[in-house]
Length: 116
Length: 112
Image (cartoon, rainbow over all chains, first blue to last red; front, side):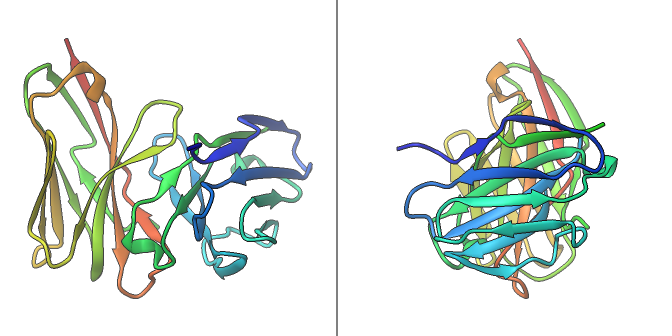
């Protein structure tokens, strides 16, 4: 079956613009994660959903970041009033199990956001 | 903040040689996972080792876990050019079962 799909693949935004990043997880996967990856670094956790419930948003850097998964499948990460420090690759991952940190994550190829 | 720290940061070897990289972490964990990332791509899961396991194998991969030292190692035997990638360890903490925390990675280059 299809893997995790993210769109757009690349996004260039002017400082102050709002952006929306989309993630289509693997069908049937209960858990969905968003990570932020800076160049040369490992992924940093942003937020986690179990079905439609956002159970952990402790990694969101500021209140400009908002994520939703209203029907328990597709998720959107929204960044309002983008800043240059938001430039990074945003990775989405899904997992079959609800106890997500005890099972493998399946990652999409990410959205590379550049804020100019 | 990143939980795991990989060592070395970079590794350059020739095809056929073995590659070993280490991961240290700070808190109590349920499991430790290793992932591979090719340039410009997402991460691919390699292997998961639980806190009550000491060693695990998958094909040319061998992972060890020493919870008393809070460390793990990943060995790739008989490396190939296609193994060129960044390798990350990720820990599932006992106090936060909803997320994995990744290290900064080891960049491995395998030359033919």
